[in-house]
Length: 169
Image 1 (cartoon, helix red, strand yellow):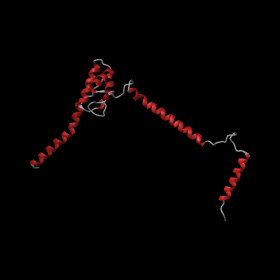
Image 2 (cartoon, helix red, strand yellow):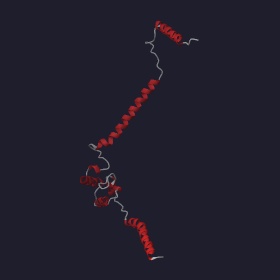
Image 3 (cartoon, helix red, strand yellow):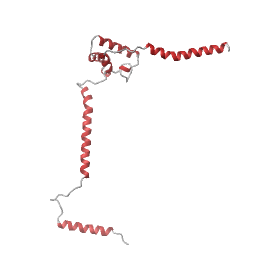
């Protein structure tokens, strides 16, 4: 083979080894950090300020990893998960709290789904009761019944109607 061809083969081998070995080396370099239970609870209770729309637990940003490490250190220093979350909310803002507080305006976020569900069930139940009433046979009240004279006139009117609708052969 010519020298130029050897160089091409050697370059292709280097490129392919970089493509295959690169991701493997990156995976080996990542350590799986075991979080303190309080740190895990705090991380689970926060949205990521660095990965919009993602929880801090799954944020892939290096800043997100740094924040998780900071939370881990705070938990190891003895802070509770609620305290850590409050510190992060003070630093980053209320919009990064994953669950609304169960007090103040946050109480509405917890109660409104239940109120809506209850109202929907009441409306559906009312609709079903009304629709069943409409299907029941109606019985004329004894007091409001027809007199003998009215019954005779009604029978006569029905005979006239039948006679007018009868086909002529």
